[in-house]
Length: 278
Image: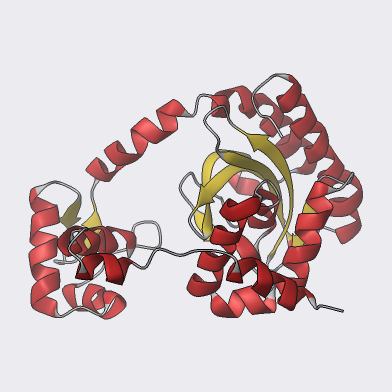
């Protein structure tokens, strides 16, 4: 009988990954553009300031190359220097996200239900979509005072190590599903193996009559979360709704008996409104 890890490996083996290194060798993509985007992506926390050397270390590039990239990004307004000479993301970076968020009008129709769930649970509720091997939050509801970690719009996390990610994976099938798992295994090999059992079980549970899955400290040790797949948007994006709460004031029974079913009910309502299809 195959183990869950074997099942995950079989799924990933059927996937196809485009190797960016191979594309750069044949000249079909711009290496400089890739490096510039990597500089922007290496800022990981709110308000983080990085030196030239820290960026070079994170990306495995030499300092002169990083210096040229940063000067270019400063000239275009996407990063700036702080008072101590370090680099920070600049407000212009938000202009890249605006068209994506503005096109996702379905977010606003879901806010009322999200707030209902947040008030019922005293937790934080998010809508998330898939971005490569990760999920990315596109809408949030809840009170910062109720939570040590507020999931702001744009926060990301690995698909295979989170309730949100597993709910999103449950909406995928065929080659798209296999390709995503192949990329997840390449990007997060340890997480892929460590959470194989929970990932397989969660995908199956989301596809069953339960309609949701849970995670108890898998992604962040201090967080309990339940997530329900909503379906796909009109333009094909898989979307999941997640409610997360600090573990110190949450019982697993509450997540299973109250929070999860409440998310499923909200998901059903949103599909009835025509916002998502399964």
